[in-house]
Image (tube, rainbow, N blue to C red; front, side):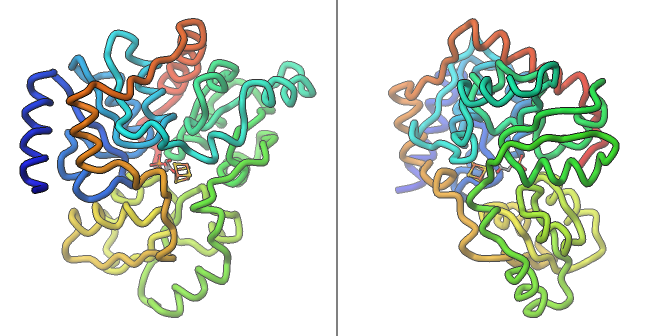
Length: 307
Ligand code: 13P
Ligand code: SF4
């Protein structure tokens, strides 16, 4: 059954000159049919460079929106229109304007996990792979950082020379991890290195041997001589880690680290998306132009040597 669906997806993909981009947290079968699997930064880069007419984005809404911001001439499809990001929804344009008005002449750095409206009000965007580097490089000594307070704390730790004022947002999937969870996992797997995502609480980051974006974790696992790793991010990444490192062991820091929004996309929904060309994600042109400036600025400041 799945094989039939896969074949039809591949056929439609060719017919419509489409490509499939998938985030590292997507279901295994989605990762397997994707043309490219990566973290938010890699997916934005790929979306900016790819040659095709249609992009099927297997991820959450802000990711498809970022692809649409970068590709107004392409059709960007999000197979499950309700696949959102609760953290991105913790701030909107109105809230940001009101908050930022208390800090005149202070630029807004927005995590890519934001709506296009919030990006349009930002000076620059960043992802978990380059947030410290972006804040370090931009020519301002004080910044407002939205929406993830944990990523903001990670930036503060790495860029102590700058003042970072965080918005009070968080990712429910990463924020639920506490110090005790790390201590329990370390006790269970005493030989494993602890690798966590910067969306985790500072107390969790404190106990980790390595902190990186999802693709940064993949690179770290490949290059490390260690054989066992406790992985502190959404469990979907474990599939890719195991596939690319069959001789190493990966344990989820907590099995309940699941982002439900990243799991709603199925082979069936990708097939329907391509067949019926839905759901088209489009950003109003005035917002798109301003949001693109913030995303483009991220690419200008980003140096690929970062995690
Ligand atoms: P990265 O894959 O960019 O590390 O982001 C994690 C995430 O939570 C995306 O929603
Ligand atoms: Fe949003 Fe967290 Fe899910 Fe990523 S893992 S999409 S940040 S809720």
